[in-house]
Image 1 (cartoon, rainbow, N blue to C red):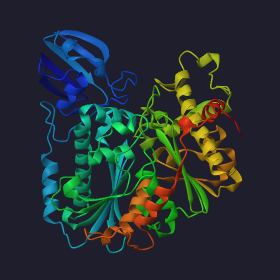
Image 2 (image 1 turned 120 degrees about the vertical axis):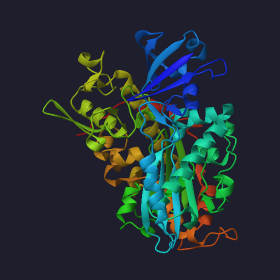
Image 3 (image 1 turned 90 degrees about the vertical axis):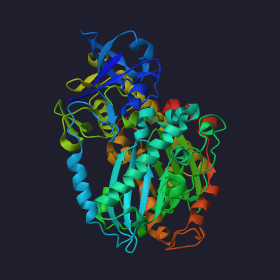
Length: 550
């Protein structure tokens, strides 16, 4: 059958037959069209929605989910035209009509390459996030941040969260997932080098960090142990390898992946601890560091680091002791499972306020609103509670109970959205309470609370504290530090990266930072397993409320 795919002002025509994949998501992926499937194709997130515009020359306006649209259904017709909404395109994909091509871009790239100079050397720091990959170029001689860039992790087409990725990797798609991340990393490094007038051959060392799932997929490790009890990873020790082995690049540039604490508290959190521990060594006077998402931080005797994401990872350090845990907060703070939720992209409502009964909001990039991101969700909940539009249990007043509270045009916060917030908030707060108890300390013993992650860097700490995400006792001690994972990778790239070769002794100390330190704290850390903790459920239910503090 003939399938015409509408992509905004472009279109592509393909043939679907008995040899095609069984699912429309896979059919589109084979054609270089990566449609959002945040829930791992369970049909619950609604992000892979399509519109059937024409069926055998008859106009239609039927809405369907691509993940629930089968090949057999498509083959019932001779001609179909569909409109695809949330998608990414393979950069090498050719659009049949309405596509001008990349000729001008290719020529400008060629011109630029002719003037490149490899007289300088660099190290590269990379943070592979579940949603976003961040790249930082570090000058080999001065250890200063030269440039930063980021791109969407193209694995998102297999699901928005790590559980979806684990399930996909364990069901035969590991190589597909690995291909995505390898291509993302290689193209990201090449693009950053080209944009800064250098070559890949000028790179001395690459530091890569990320959560355990992302690192497993990158290395091609079996992920099945990450998704079922006893949640055993293949390897969370320091990995010293090279670009030929892990990225398929012949240059054999050394690659170092820091160790992780546990299956769910991975190398990205270890890197975050390093960034805080070694904050005085970070080139914090360089504005490019802020662009990388890492603020200047200082070392404290007792601190807590919380990475607010789908799995909220927490580390408490008291002297030389480390206690870690993680809690399944869910992806609400990343815009997933929220009816009008979106990631932190242009057009996302990032801040919200009710002023004299009138709604006021900001969007990322000042663009037309397209949905609500995590920081916007926190602001909205705070304002609704402050103005008695929701009660302490998160119940909307009767006026809004059916259709939700309208923010802008068709963008609204529903009762179910508030429940998703409560589930995430309760998991984070209950986990933090138990972490403190298991460490034998109280709030007054904590010198500093660091909040990391993309969501953590943009929330209003006062509002987050007022509705109970952050304990009020730690409000004045809390600091958003952005992407601490990339901060730690920069620290490693600056301190040991330039010295690394394949005779490199990973216990060698350079600039007071070494791999042995990371291995020591990860090996000796105490893990608190919340799923087995006797008090977690009770604390979780207690935290399923929305506090209100003025």
